[in-house]
Each structure stands twice: as structure tokens, then as C-alpha cells.
Image (tube, rainbow, N blue to C red):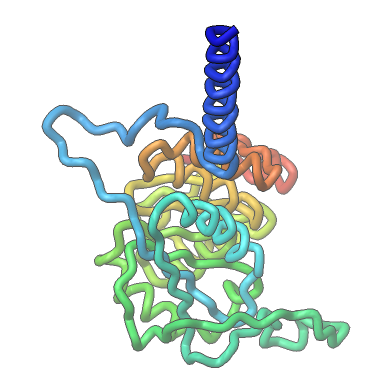
Length: 271
């Protein structure tokens, strides 16, 4: 009987260890990315380019909220996997409204405009690796001197420069897109492209990558740009992007040329 008792005890002890191990595996998998499937590609002997850590978002009055919130949500999820720093930039530290300046762009006198609180002013000029410029009604504002001046000043030191939707119009007016390939919202194509005659405007395009310059088409395309940026600029980026998209329940558009809105708004192919 003694050997039998010993065997039973060993059996239950082994079973307990096994169940505990499985519980650890289950808890560690939940909320984490899959194992590294790939790394940032680099040629033999090349030093890996450092992944950007400090993101600055421009907050000019009357920007489109999702131009900021869409990419920001992707990057916030990324910040749970790696260290990132956020800077929200405006003229002053006062809350910035999305309400248009011109009454003509608020014909019904609505009050449906949120406010965003900056962390820094343009004059503070905090160190950043990436600057994100949103679009919206602001891109047609005649009062953009402070934003244009800041973009001109900071552009040379940036690792990457990103525009969302008609934010390319602000960047084009600053001259930093001259000679670069870029895209913008197809519904506003004629107005925005006229702001940058030296820009190589691309259509069809959901987003365009040209060296340090990244640009997206209309509004929600900024989310797909953000996912592509994560894929290319962070170690194990594809797995991270797919994990974040799954949690967001967002279907990533992976083909940058997938742009039905070019046809919808009769924008001819270019570049």
C-alpha cells in the first residue's frame, strides 16, 4: 500500500505544478504581443535606426479631432509595449478648441466643439523626434503664421514629419514638402495641392512615405498610416500593429494605393 500512496501523492503534486504553470502562461499571454517574428531590416554592417520615442502633435485651432485622436490611439497602445513620450503643442497653454474661427464655417451656431489642453507652446520648443500635423478647417485659415514658423524651425531636426488629411496644406505653405511626394484628402484635392506647387502630389494614395516625410489622405487614413509607421519603425512592428488592431477591432488597410476616394472625387492618377 505504501508505494501506491506515494505514487498518488506524486501524481497530485505533478498535476498541481502543471496547472500552476498553465495559469502563468495564460495570464502572460493576455494583453501581450506575440513573440518577435521580425526585426527592422538593415543591411550588413549598418547600425539600426533608433525607433522614435518623442512624439509632438500640433494643436492649431479648428483642427479635425480624429486627425489627432486616430493616430494617437494607435501610438498610445504602442506605448504599453515600449517607452514613448507625448507632447501637445500650441500657441499658448490655454485649451485649444476645434471650433472654426470663421462664422461661415459654423452656420448653425453649434457648440459641439471639444477643447484640447496643450503641454507645451511653440516657443518652448521641446525636443521631439516626430511632429504630427492635423488638418481640418484650420488648413484654410488665413492666420497660420505661428504654425508655419514653428514647422519651418523644427523640420530639419525631426526624425520624421507626419501630416494627416489636409494638414499637408499647412506643411506645404511652410515649404517643407517641396520636392517630396505627398498626398492629401481627395475631397479637398484642388484647394490643398494649390498650396504646394513644388510638392509631388500623389494619387491614388491612402498614405505616402517619402523618406522622413509621411502623409495620409482623408481623416481616418491617418489610422492606417500610424499602423504602417509602427510596422516599419519598431522592432516586431508587424506583430505589434496586428495585436493593437485586433484590440481596436480595426481592419488595417495595408496597401497604400488602396484609395477609392480618388475615383469618387475625380482626382486623376499622379506621381
